[in-house]
Length: 224
Ligand code: 5RP
Image: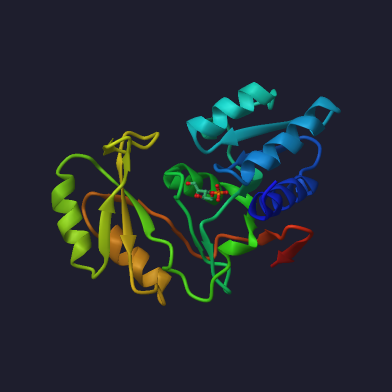
């Protein structure tokens, strides 16, 4: 296994230690949470009782395959915890998420959770957010207008594509990947974007991480 994958596996598996009997949990999306789900499925087979809200159809499908009991966000008032990945993590534990296009459901699930645990390989740590293009979810109707408005905020934008056609999120929307010259004020950037009609949600997760499990090829570290 490559060092990056080993790091993801270590971080993803470690986070399962936070899950206790009868908890209601959120399950994020991506290749690090993949490892969380593999380990969680083992625990479920051994008798751990949990129910999980998936943050994407990909996670839902994997959970079904692994035999992890599911429920929807509409079924619950609050979740005990969520385990999710990230694309960038700042020293303040602010995040850029949405590399997998699941940012809207991920944010809704994060906000519904009492504790938020982020799992990531050490390559995701950064001094300042913005090296990774910020994903924002926008409505398809009049998307070019929204594109132009976002452009005025001073970033370079790519409409996300999959197989040469626009990528469609689980909610039926488009994603703009917005490259800023560093994001020193994540709250300000998030707020400016959210004021634009057509923008549904941004991948900036500010002060939404309680614990970050950082994986290295041979160990993990906890940031809190
Ligand atoms: C999906 C996400 C993922 O959590 C993020 O892209 C990290 O994924 P990975 O663990 O595969 O690096 O935000 O929308």
